Length: 157
Image (cartoon, rainbow, N blue to C red; front, side, top):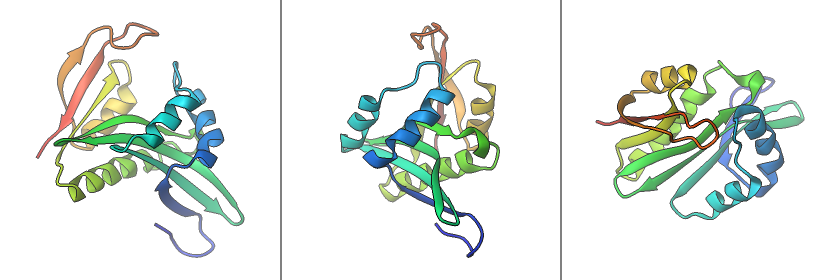
């Protein structure tokens, strides 16, 4: 996706190994227990994983603004990881990525989508609800670092 000339250009691409230094910086700034580079590489090698990077170009400079990893397995899409770089938050990138996930899943005949989210992550829960997800369950002690529970959310037709 590109926009008018002289305005920032936004593009969603498949994540590449060359993107990992920027993705790792966003990952470490965004999560208490960040994934390792090896975990990202494993996801990029997984056939049912969709690994996406949002790239913003301003003039000659391009940077990773956000990323998402989700799986398409059987009859569902499962969000595994999403983060937006601090200076690009609250601009709609995360909601746009959620729509990209929905569109890619629909192209594969998949309409059900799911995710887990920390109970305390009010911002993410609000975003997911806006995107049509509802809480359907709870996993106690889901997160190793804090033993916090995860809410299981689903978006279904």
